[in-house]
Structures are given as structure tokens and as C-alpha cells.
Image 1 (cartoon, helix red, strand yellow):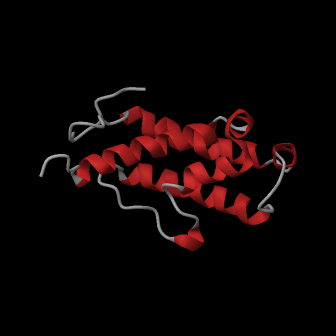
Image 2 (cartoon, one colour):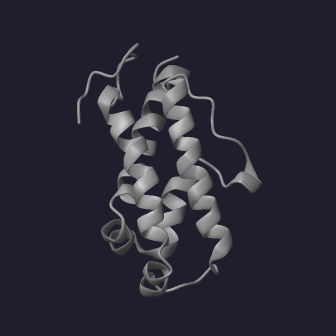
Length: 132
């Protein structure tokens, strides 16, 4: 059927969106300021749920090492989410030290994921073809 997107292409696109969310977290305070307190969490949680709401998705485009690195980011972000109120100023969140702690874990995941690169979003690929 015309216009249908394969499961593999969906996985490729999801991996790329996860990389974007991790880039924001790896940006530390600058990433937080760019999208705000709620967006900082929700951009990641759009693709990888909080531990209370599900498991890391089983994407065909993630290696075991990438999954483990994302699980580390997820645990750290979940801890921050659980330790802070739903509404908090960016300044108070920074003062609590969370962006710096999250940044360290997110940078490791980002470096690992970008070493393989991003996938094309229109053509199925076995390995990522887009670097950086």
C-alpha cells in the first residue's frame, strides 16, 4: 500500500529522535534553557518512558551497548524527575545540580550513538549512513 512506512524506517526515525533528545540532555544547562524545565524531561520521555510507565523500546536500530547507555540516561533522568516537583524553575533545577549529573551520563550515550551515526529517514539501512 502506498505511503506505508516499514517498521524498520520507524525504528530508524525513532533512533534519530532519541539522539536529538540525548543531545539536549548532553547540553546540560544550555539544553535546559533552550527547551525549558518540562520540555527537558518530556523530549526524552516522548521516546523512552519513565521507569514507572514502561520499558526502553526494543528498536532494531540500537546496539546492546547503546541500549545500556540509554538505560543509564533513563535511570538518571528518572531519579531527577522523582526528586523534583512537577513545576520548578530552571534556576532551581540547575542549583540542585541535576543538569550537570544528567549531562555526564548523556554525553557518554551521545558519543556512543554518534560514533555509529544517524540513519536515513526515507530508506531502510542496515547501518547508519549519516555521520554527525
